[in-house]
Image (cartoon, rainbow, N blue to C red; front, side, top):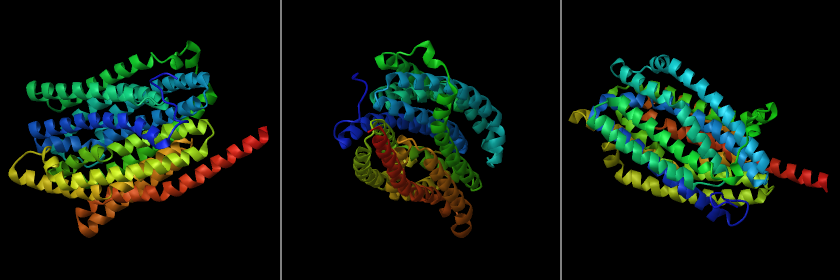
Length: 457
């Protein structure tokens, strides 16, 4: 076994899952660090209006990135299953086919993103005074779609083999590059929003190069020309895993864009405050996403090995750890959140006070309900890891329905406070789908393995 891979079919589940999740968590810390610096530099150097413009693009940009992440994450499920089954040839063919499908997807998404930028921003009721800045930012971000696709595919490939350290090191490099270039392009060269976007793209390109160098050193992934031959059956299997995850993320994003449309109607100060807290969203869920990736790999490898009881052990361990971590993060945000969100906001005293009040109210409500989000990630990722990506997509639809109903109806009854609860209600809606789904799916997988054993006995 190569030192950069991790066999999660043997050993104590808690220690394996945690040792895999910790590097991912640290990688997320660095990713969130440069996201926070990005926001702080733009907010402080360019003002509330430009910060609001970035906020108006949040869900559109996240929709593109999350679609890419979902697609490649689905590809990684098949890789993890074949790695757990010790099928090295099948693993290489899965990786080669994923490269071809990802390249095609990158071209399609690049064109679609550029064509959709202006119409979507207008559809979201983006205020005219910040529309120009939003268009600028998205043009640059969407130009980097091939870079984002390459990084996410490489990172998912490494994670499927149990390597969480290389994505961490890549993110550390990207973080340092992004922060340095942010300061240079925005504060020194005064490039404004394009400077912040270009800094992000260059940083992502550095992470791609780093992952590619490392992945070429893995003997198990010495791909040949024939591994890139795309058979219809393999392409269908990969897309059947990846597309529902991508659509799940897209559906969630559309719900977020509808919420953004409502937010945009409350004025620039409200948008800026909402943006400040949304930029902390990644910090709030930092451990959740890491344990989610860990559970996808853990469940996938153990499914490949045919060990269903071990998957149950893993999800119990991950759930308890995530509940403790979410409680700690929630306490920190409630205690120190006002000072933290204040780092992103500048303007007149009245603008700053109004935006900070919005940001802190929103932050405390999300923080108090954080355990709900953490359980969502653990159960959703486990279901995906055992090869069912449709039920998690259904949970994404539940999120969508809860989010838009809350955003459209609650403000009519309680004003802007209703918008603060839209996200939390979306998490609860997803959990109502995911927890029963986990029980059903694992029983189905167990019956299938029992039947297969009896058939071959």
